[in-house]
Each structure stands twice: as structure tokens, then as C-alpha cells.
Image (cartoon, rainbow over all chains, first blue to last red; front, side):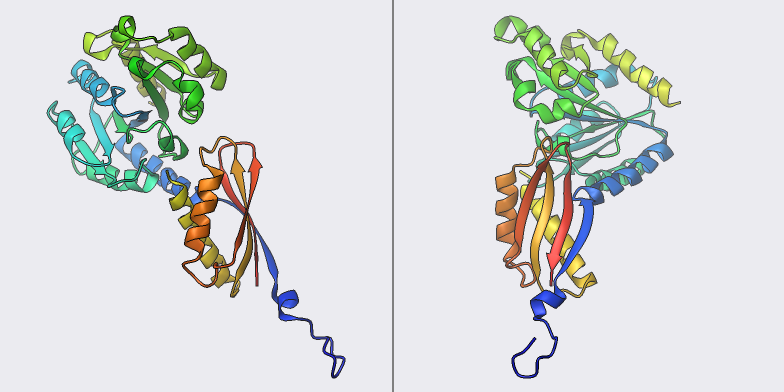
Length: 236
Length: 81
């Protein structure tokens, strides 16, 4: 109301203020793309595993050993995520398996959009896959926040990293289905408590399936291969 | 590490909402931050404060973070004029 004519006009801020209820996830765009990825994975006939760990936990080495064991029986594809270089994809290609390298140029995780592009590139190298591994950027924190459309998420923890890591970095352990403790052949040389590494992860996520692996020595590989086979059988 | 990119996404969404509702200014933004989201509230707030200065519509917007259960980050409510 103004003082001159006693009109009922209110101030601009009162009349034009609006409160909009949104209630939308800031991950919504990523999650929509992840659902689109799921369709691409289904079109390729593939079970998809998202592998998360710190750098150097043994993701690529486990993949190399897996390829050696499954060569000729299953069709495998790999999408590699790193900040720089083609080195991991080159290691996979050297085994005769189609691989796409995504270099994020600094980003600390793969998101569903990057996987969508990577998946189209992988499908240019082969139409059908039994299993596709996504090797995420080496980082135990950020990749856990981004759903890529995967069927199974696995977290790897190597013995040299220490058995206190599940409690310190809970996100990846809470959101994973499978937990591989790697480099168990180094147990005699490190102060690593297998009990702590298992117990604290299970406290975070009682559903976690746990494997103990020393891939280059072949230790635990049959249980790992059985897990993959069950996953593929469950999908078909 | 990705708090800045999430703050960038949020600002993009706010600009879209402002255009949709023909608003000139975003006043207050309420975001629910899940306790298991792996997102550091201070870093997200810092990212928002820095990036919001880049455009006139969001320049004086106040970000209010409400802690919640779960692992999501949800844009709950926006006040604009």
C-alpha cells in the first residue's frame, strides 16, 4: 500500500516471491543415463561388473588372470577408466580382448555418460558379450557415488593398503555386492588383519560376498570364476 | 573431489528453474545431503558459493544444506523472485 492513494499494491518482493518444491536428486541426470546404459548392456547380452578400488589394488591384474582362465569359453569386453594413458586398455588388448580406454583427464570417477560413450565404442568392436568389466578410475571414494547401470559392483582391497580401510572409506563397501581382498600372498609381510578387514566391511554391509585372492598365484581364482559364471547363468 | 561438479549441476538446474518461472533472482536453495553420500558439506558449500557468483541470477543465493539419511543429494526447495 502506498502512502499517497491507499492502493493495495504490495511490494515487489512480497508479490513475486515464489517457493518451488523440486525434490529431485542431483544425480538424476546420471541415473537416467545409467538406465540407458542398462538397455545397451541388455542389447549386448552382457552381465556388467563395475570394479572399484584404490590405484594399484590389482584390478587390471585380476582382469588379465580372468581372461586367461575364461579365454575361449566366454566373450569378454572391458571398459577402462583412468585419468591418463591407454596403458590398462593395452594390457587387456594384448590378451586379445576388446577394450575401450576412457581417459577422464582429471576427473576422479567414471559417470554414466562416459560409460554410455565407452559402451558404443566397445560395441563397435563386437556385438555380443557374455560379460563386460568396467575398471573404474583408481579411487576408493568418488566412484561409489555414481551408478553406471552395472549388474554387480565390486570393491577390491589389497593387503598392502591395510585392513582398516573398510571403516575409513565406507562408501565403496556399503554400495558393493562383492568384496575381493587381493594380494593375499603378501600377508606374511604386512600387518594386515584378515579378521578386521572382513568384520568391519560386514558391519557396513552384511550382504557383502567376500573373496580372498592372489590372482597371479591362482589363489582364490576358482571361487571368483564360479561367481562370474553364476552371475551369467542368473542373467540368462 | 566431485563437489564442484555437483555444485555446477545444481546451478545449471537453478538457472533452468529460474527461466521456467520467469524469476530474476534465486534467494534460497534447500538441498538434502545424505549422510552416506560421500559428499563433503563444506566443499559443496564452497563450490556453490564460488560458482554462484558467476551469474547475476544466483549471485546472492543462500544454500541451506539439510543432513538426511541415505546416500542421495536432493534439491528439495527453491525460493526465487
